[in-house]
Each structure stands twice: as C-alpha cells, then as structure tokens.
Length: 277
Image 1: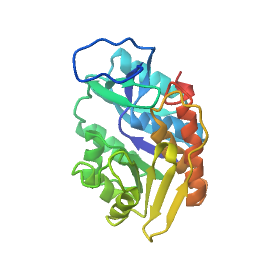
Image 2: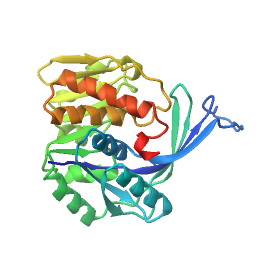
Image 3: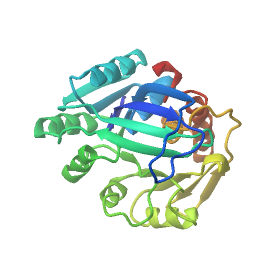
C-alpha cells in the first residue's frame, strides 16, 4: 500500500542572519544563503521515502523554473510526484538565525485548485493506507469534499481555536501540531481528541514530544541529541518517522521515538532532507 500526501511543495530561499530584523528600515548581511525545496507536504513525502514507505505526492506546481526544480529534486529522492497545474510555484523567503528563529515571507502563491485536480487527488487518497492532507486551500477543498481513507493531518502552530484548522481536525484520525501558540500543550491535545481524532501528537522542539490518546493515555519522548544546522522541516520529518513506524506495526512510544530520530535527519541538513541537496 502507498501513503498519499496532498499539499504544499515550494521553492525556498533560506537566508541565515545573526538576528532577525527589527521592524525598522535597516541593512543586514547574511552569513549564508540556500535555495532549496520547501513545503510541508514535500518534507513529509521525502522523509517517508527515506524511511522506506512508498509515497505519492499531489502538489500544485507551475511550469516555471522553480516548479521544475522542485519536481526533479523530489523524484531524485524517490518521491512519486503528481503535478497539478498552477500559474506559478509557491515560493518563500525564510529569514533565519542559528537559534531557530524564523520569519517566512510568501513571495509567490499557487493558483486556486481546479475541479480536476481535486477529483484526481480524492480518487488516489481513497486507495491510500493513510491519506495525509496538509493545511492549504487545496487541502481544505479535499476535506470539504470528504476523503475516503484514514486522514492524518498536521495542524502546525494550532492555537486550539482557529476556524481554518477546525475541518482538518475533525476529519482526522491522527493529528500533529507544535506548542508554539499555547502555554499548556496537554490541554491543547485534550481539546483535539475531544473533537474526534483517536490520537493527538505535539512536538516541543528541544523538549521532545508528547501525545494523548482519546482514552486519556499520555505518552512522551525526549528530543534526540542533534547538532542543529537548520530547523526547517523538522516537524514534517517527525511526522514521517512516526507514520513509518506506525505502518510497521509499532506502538505509540516506539512511533514517538522514531519520529524524534527522523527529525534529526532534517535538523542536521541545510535542506528538508539531505537527498534534496
């Protein structure tokens, strides 16, 4: 069986600064600059492939140079890519520091998804062992139409009340998020499983990760030891490592440990995954 992932794949320009800019006009000199594949769905797909999972990615990509570069890099990383038409490829400029602080600027956004792309994606998702539907306008339309397979989704910096996130949360069997927007991650996980998922997982950076089952069972894992090069995509790598272990029949504790180890692969690379270099 194959995992089908639907959502953003982008071309990113990562700019490393000694500090993020103050909100006033000024000049800074970058210590490094990297152009590479981005996008939360692209990150999940390439890490799933690295873990030995057959994966197919549906993404909106333009016929521009950036779209060609994204598609070719993902194919080299053993990800099967289904390209849906967009006038331009999604592009970001990320200002970053060594400590992991980041400001992400969207400089190009994909076209609205058309009906044929939605129909094609839904047909494929219905055959998947796990249907990964990521936050995006594309993903929101898939959720609205109804996904046939078991849905896993990543809520990212969910605050517990965002209206855009709500349909993804209620459609999902398993949800992931980080604790950036909340003070009490356990309360956030409880609020999530109360809305339908059987399991909610929250990554906490250097503090590891926690999970809560619908039955109230709590799980936790410490962060793996790592020499951080770049923090982009660590959450997507964690998601992929957890999912790969789940598909192999592992319990939640083992899945959390596998996610923490897979996150190291992203953290120790200037790319979402070394295969994209």
